[in-house]
Length: 350
Image 1 (cartoon, rainbow, N blue to C red):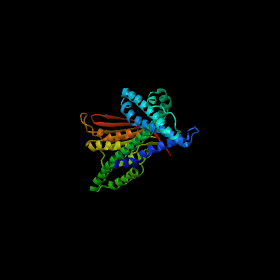
Image 2 (image 1 turned 135 degrees about the vertical axis):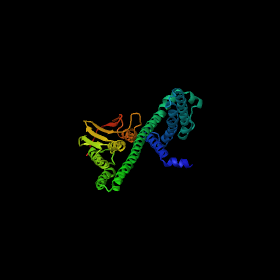
Image 3 (image 1 turned 60 degrees about the vertical axis):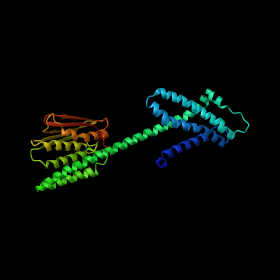
Image 4 (image 1 turned 180 degrees about the vertical axis):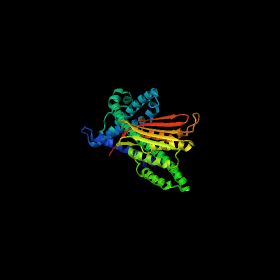
């Protein structure tokens, strides 16, 4: 009983009931005969009951169990048998239940055996009437299922994207705060400068990149601030260059570019005790944005690349935000690692 109330609470049953009531009333008021309304109501009721039965039989048993699973022979057998049964039942309902309610006795009724063997009347008088409504019901059901499926996909993608961003932001903040803490321990004069850079970055990350796509100019400023902040950690041994040639009216998914740069610092400069080098290039053609991040590394060819592992989050975000409109190319050599992504341009909207 509790399950029934829960089912009704979800309004699915209610929607079905409302659908059939509206359809029933429509059939009554659209009847062109001159019979009294109550006669029409009884006659239509004798039709709509079999229509409801066969609609749910097709939608929730026959099609899912046999047609969708490609059991075509069984589907055909059950479809023919069920059509015969439902048409016979509808005819008997009309002749032996509905007609006695509005016809004056005495009157002649067809015997059940005659109803069961009169194929022509079952097909011409009942099959098309019953199955036209059943097909209408199936069409509406499949349409709503399609809409719901698309809605669930979008909701799932949105949730996944939020989870990915939630993984990214704390990771970035943790690394940056560690940098500032290291500078503060040695009373470095660079501490206040790094706090200022972090403030600008936090302002952007927390308040300006909550949209699916953001202006590319903001992402470029974010990268510049981030690079300046990371450079404070290293001495002159680190060589970093960032070049960009882009149009102003362009949008991009937030934080993806930052993720790639962060990855290069973490697994490039952070693990290279020699003279690390990071080269970042952002360029734009008419409809494509290309972002290249190169960094030196101490990893050997036969070792598992931590940089590649760190790009897993980026892979997932690109699949969600740029489905079939992006490429990602990873080039790992003996002492270097390079990632190149291309994104289809998202025009700026004012």
